[in-house]
Length: 447
Image (cartoon, rainbow, N blue to C red; front, side):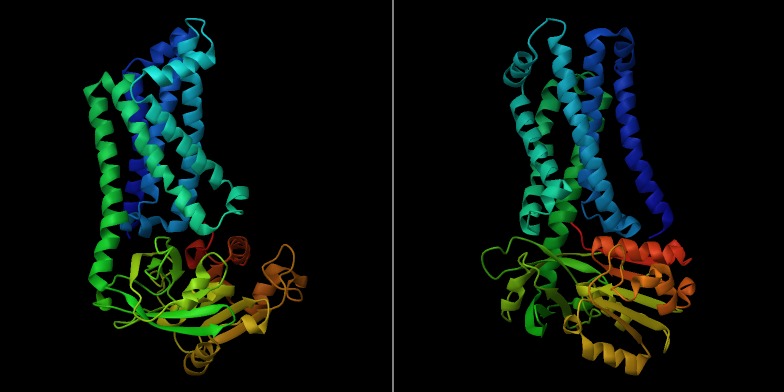
């Protein structure tokens, strides 16, 4: 995707916030603040609520799976922005509730709790807004890292969908009681356009496009193969797979129609290059529902969303390339090793695992080594503290070890896939080795 598309998308997102503030100013917000007193408190509270509403819609759009936005920024970057915008909008929402309540209670010297209850029970749409705020609070609490570590991915994903409910329930109170919304035809037109656009984008890219691709390609399980302890490959067949816009290194959200739990989506990368007649994913049993993959039967129908991800060969134009994988992170990198047009002897695979038993796809890696000159470096053993390397390799430091493993790292394209913290350390080491940022390609597993 051309860079100017990314610039346009970023500018449009920032512009929405500017427009919201400008509309608030046009409705006398600055004069109310300048006047001081409780009116200023209420005016700031209204501004906090308006910006919070705008950011909530932007938060939804960030993960709406818009293909052009995905290709411009990558899902990793969008997820980070989604998280930052989400927490910011939540804090502004809390500020809105507190300041509006104080602004209404102050002039009449009323009890704050009584005023809050009066606002909730007498103003149209406020009970729905309270329910929406409760849904958003639940989403925010479960998005805190400490809480996420205690939840299975499926549970977290299901709870996270309540963000849509929370945003939707806030709309009626804005329509019926929002002073800034009701007072200006321009404000009404702006907000209606923003709400309608967001709803349309969600329906098209989160519902319509996946449903259309699922119906068109009719994917089903063709074969299930055990690759090793806790590691299973699933081969899938379907119609018109040559027209499926997927590249090696990308992933889909998969739903297997094999019984209870089918509605929970799982992100799995292709572990081989896409073929006109078949796709392959490889799944490690991590206890989050992935174990059921080993029990799939041929003929099981599949629902798909995607493809997603920027860990592809789109930016690769030839030359030396190094793949650095940890554990199940080998899957998209193996697909790239099959797919990329590197010359004989130009590719290196650095494969990190706890033990030799955890090394997957040995026969394919050996074939690539014999037929395409792939150089393979295995890093086995427990990971050293504050390092991405195992004990024994990390003694001289990460940078020295990388230069020893890949002497010409600076001139390489570096592809990294593994756990978040591990990938971040490898990326930092590559930067220390002088690898240009546009030559470092990373895929994260964190949710």
